Picture (tube, rainbow, N blue to C red):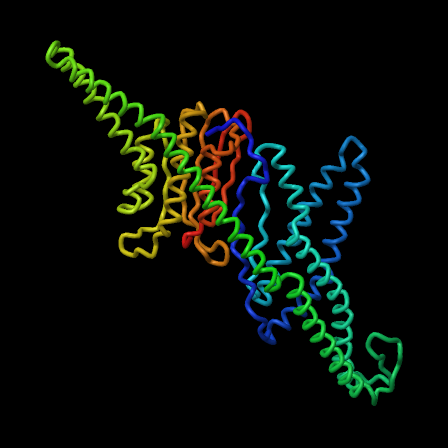
Length: 448
């Protein structure tokens, strides 16, 4: 599975993920959510302080020790991963609390393989806007938590004031102050303290809900812009995929079937000339033309199968891939686990999704046979439910044990795979370090 020229990064199609489901209009948040927000803010006042102290420590060590033989780079890498983990936890916490429908924060892998690809991935993660929005939300929650903690203490002290007359002392202290009051004023002051403390806690919870929604939930305009960008990318990939497929068909016809048919015509012409003077030679030419005709029919059948696999419609992706593996020049280990659609057709992914994955696997097997010099290819196909807010995804991985070093060549097979998957609304990722193995992963929405 290898091609020799690199495609410029700007030309690699990356299908945008589905727009977040958080575009629902603002709704009323219940009392339990507010109580949960108060409890979580109190916890964030403690945990958030420790988390941000750790992040600042990693950043300081990374910058300070960077000149020392690059030791600081390890701390900077740890800083990026710790920052991403903080943002991921914040997204999960806020969505679990308010049910905004936020998509889980996901890493942004680079399409480039090897160590360079890992560095690109690290940089993309560091510059990821959603990650920093999650960190900002965590910072806001930590600050509000530091405000909530003394208010909770004041509320507890106000409750204690209600029972001060039962203790029998002559004076009591007003919560959060050093002011002493008479025991006869303890109950009224305690009631006022409880009311004020509860009002401040509810206000902090309301402020937290407003700020987290403003920071983490994209605006309607931003979602529409992202949807337009994703639609444009998908349309461009569909056009590009069609052009690549047309070019491949023209090349196969020109280089394969057309010369063979021309040869058949020439042999039949020679046989016609010799049929009276040399019947034996004419018979041999006719036999040779007959053999070439059958070969041309086989090539046309294979070409038609490359355009449309009828078994895919009739018997599904599992059977189509089994037939594909049986024709492969490299031994294929097939591991397909898809829901049984014999009794319920709704369990089957759309034809567009299955066709995109089928042709991606077919092209990968062709590339592996031509370039990988491997002795085995493993194909794994799964249907993954619960991805992207419950939308099932059709996922496949093709891995060979060849020499690696696969690169994307404009107009080549891997380029066609990337555009075809992007046209179906999916994403593809190639990992092929020098020395192997080469692995291609594709993921397409089942409903595409």
